[in-house]
Length: 125
Image 1: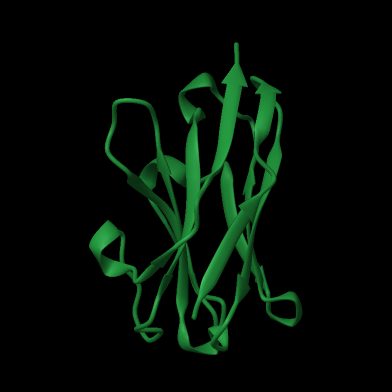
Image 2: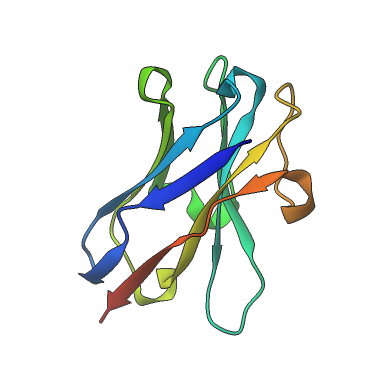
């Protein structure tokens, strides 16, 4: 069974930074591409970034380029999302997800097989 547990969210002032973590357990994550999504109140879940476990290739939504950085620590089976220069519009629940087709990536919710519960990020102005 694959489990994903996010942490690192919180309340932060605009302009601040956060590093979100996604701890993984279960099947070796060498077989997965990992992604981060976010869902703001009243909006659909949207893709933020993805990373292949082997090789560490990264992909970003256009809206995430420049302020968001996805990375992974294979030894700790953990994926990170660094967010800098936070804006009030970044307020959302951030979820990590695992895609079993590790040779490719997706920016679609349907492209991922396992999901964490999410961590709340609130940015005050």
